[in-house]
Length: 312
Image: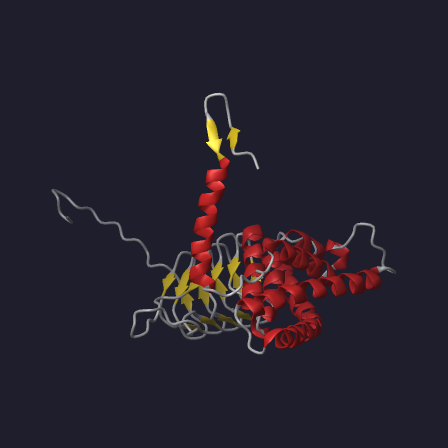
């Protein structure tokens, strides 16, 4: 490696070796805090997980996201080959995650657990496809601008996010939460829709437009729910233990019952329940439960005139 590098005629020499050395020192300190004296583990690869996700999306919808020259006769062969390669790739990433978090029993136990996760994940793929078909139908039925189901599959960011969420949710449930979070963040970066993989979402789910939607980890969403852009289903507060540390995993996000519509910009916070068939208007801030059939809107603005400093 060159000791110096000239960036420009007026920049002068830059000591690349010194920068590399300083970064190495900082990296060692950070690794010592995280791993102590243990051997550094191989981390999951985001690049590999991106490839895995795209492969699984093409397995679920091969005519939309498979090779453009794919024929109907060759579809099953393509799916078999792609799925086999994707699952092998996923298995390696799961082994890395299990090793990272110190799975007991050594390598043999890690391999056994990874195989169990892969087996159960593979078995769930047809179920995921069946759920996604209800989501795609909900998007088509719920948007007058949709001209066809194929357009919905190709073009709707809400559908793209939900496809990836349903894959991530299976991984989350099966014991690979870090890989699930990486899948969720891939979807977030591609669509602007942030769904934690822990969120439980039933059939017929539709996110219209979608940019800025946030759905928290312990959210539960029922059947045939529709959200619009910039909706937040979040936590009102975070519980802490006696030492002041955040308590992880406690239910803190809303329960949205069947056939609820939540319009753009609404914020629903805390472990509250939005009753079946309710409508939550745009920009509403809601922190209490509402019964089935509720219609919640913003309070109307009042126009008042203040003279001579009144109202201060």
